[in-house]
Amino acid sequence: MTTPCIVCGWTNCACDTDGLDVGPYVPQHWPPPWIGRRAAHSSEGQASPRVCRRWCGLVQAMRDICCLAGDSLQAKAAGGPVLAAETGGTLMRRVIRVFPRKTTASPTDGLARFDLPTLWEHPADEVRVSVAFDCDKARAEQMAAEWRHVGPVTVGGPAYDDPGGEFEPGMYLAHGYTITSRGCPNHCRRCMVPKREGPLRLLQIRDGWNVLDNNLLSCPKNHRQRVYAMLRRQPRRARLTGGLEAARLTQWDIGHLVALQPAILWFAYDEPRELEAVTAAAMLLQGAGLMRNNTCGCYVLIGWDTDTMAAADDRCTAVAKLGFFPQAMLLDRGIHTRDPKAWRAFARTWANKVIVGAKCAQLRDGVGT
Image (cartoon, rainbow, N blue to C red; front, side, top):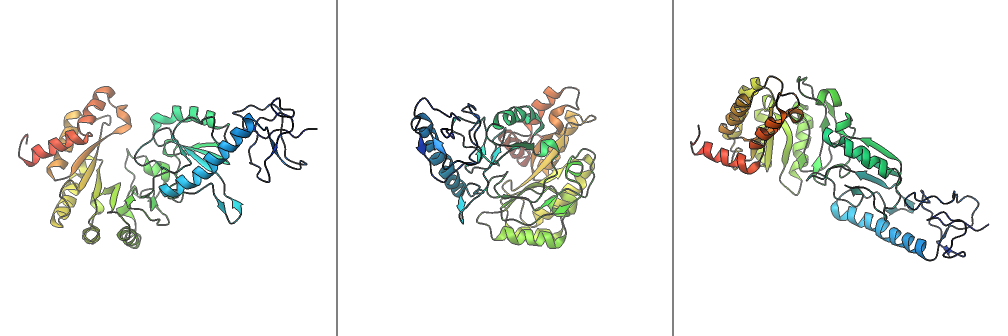
C-alpha cells in the first residue's frame, strides 16, 4: 500500500504516485485540516513520511521554511520567547498566542497572531487565545473556533477572570513590560482585581522597564527595593504604569524614584474620598522635583451608578490642578449609568491626550479656573 501524503492525506495522489521522501522530520499534527482529511494518516510502521512531488511538496517546503525558520528569527529580533527553535537537538514546543486586539503592549515575536489563520499557518503544539477586554470576547471565541484547525486551543486572559500565574516575559506582553506582583490587599467595591487575582501575591522579578503591577506600593519594602534595583539596570527609563496607590507613597519610595528619574508615573484615583491622599502624593512628588513635563499621570475612575458628569469633571480638573496628567477611566464602558453613550463621549474629553493636554495648559495659565 502506498504511504499517505503527509500534507493532503491521499494514499494515491493524482499528481504523483511515487511521492517525495521528506527525510526524518515528521511534524506532530499532520495532515493539517486546512487541506482536508482525505485519508487517516499515521506514521507508525512506515519507513519514511511522504509528500506529493508537485503541489503538496511546494506547500510543505514553503511552510517549513517560512514558518519554522521565520518564527525563531522574528522572535529573537523582537526579544520575545523563542518557542520554535532547535535547541540541543530537541524541538521546543510551538505555542502560538492569538489576540483579538493589537495594542502597543502586544507581543511582536513571530508566534503572536492578531487575525484568523492563513493557508500557510504551520501546525502548532498549542494555541492560546488571550483576551484582555470583555468587549473582545465574541471575536476571541470566533477566532478560537478557526484556530482549532492549527492546534489545541485554550481561551483565557483577564476578560475570563484568569488569576494569572508567574509572569513570562514576551509571552502575552511586548518586550520591556513586566509584572512583579498580582492581586491587591485592598477590597475596593468597584475593583475587579481582588475578585479575579485574589490577595497580594509576589512573583519572581523579571527584567523590564514598564511595570504593570496592580498595586506595587502595597508590596513589602524588600520586594520594592529589588524592583527598583532591577529598573536601574534597564536600558530605558522606568515607566510605572499599573496605577500606584497614592496613600501608600512614602518618602522612602520618593528617594528611589528620584534615583530612577522615571519617564512616567501613573497613580490611581478611584474614590472621591481619595483626593486627600492624591494631594499628599502630589506634594511629595513636587518637593522631589518629579512632577514636571507631564511625568506624573493619574487614572481617574468615572461612571458608576451614582456618579454624575459634573462630579467626574470636577475630579479630573482637581488632579490636573495638582499637576497630574489626568486620564478618565470609564467603568465598564458606562453600562452602570443612565446614558452610556453620553458618558463615553464625555470620557473621551478626559482621555484624549491632545484635549487633556490643552486643558492642563489652560489650568497652568490660569484660564478656566
